[in-house]
Image (cartoon, rainbow, N blue to C red; front, side):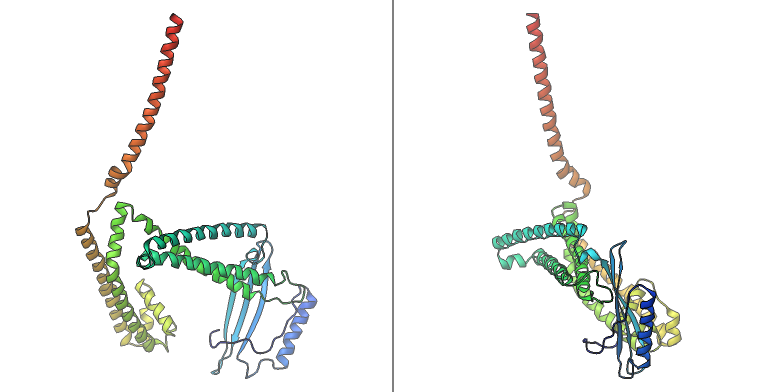
Length: 365
């Protein structure tokens, strides 16, 4: 909803939806009756139209909600909401069952990893374990996994009590299980990024990559302070742009929209002409000031923080290049393995030669 929050009270009307001409005429007649009896009047604040569509060719289920809100100031605000998913994500079939089995194996693997981390926590101590960055990060990763799959199985439980496909002329609300499927996907999308970031935990043991990670860790405290200052400046410019252009320019209609618009300006997407048309003085002034502060001042400060951290790490640690890593760490084990293989092959050849010499001596004798 765009204007208010609605908690389910009100009136409900079902419209026939069977795929034939008679049903279509009945549906049109029902809508005309609602119009003639003034079902929508001055006291109406919102009307929602809910229906579901299913494509058996692709096994796709679409849950649609159309909303029309009537604010006290007048007018109508409309919006369409769509949740689209495979039906087998709610009702298990052959492929859906295979997915559940694979997801169960994944959860078992995660539980094994949890047990491993618990053992490490026991050896290190709770305070020492959570004093490490990766200790906190691992458990945040586990939490996202468990919550997301809680949504997943809750959606399956809700869908199990709903008929699919519904009987003719009956409306079944698939919105609750669809909502939890969407939240499961959202959390898994976040957790996919969180999980892949953990690769840096294991790259610390690679010398030529550990140098870059040390630069990152060294710059992190100053970067956090820089981000706090940058957010304060960003919020200040957001308020100023909202107050200056909020009544005239659609891109600055709300504080959140102003924030996004200013971020897009950082990426080069800006409309100076509309700002100037709205305010001939503040338009160019705010644009020049924002670009100076954001792209020249803040960006150069961030670059200076990274360079300073790089110099500190280079002064404290000897940098190991990729070539040196290969020469000193990667090649020696390979060379040893090759020597062992050659030695084993040479021993077999010597034994074959000795056998041939013995057999020749026997023949001559």
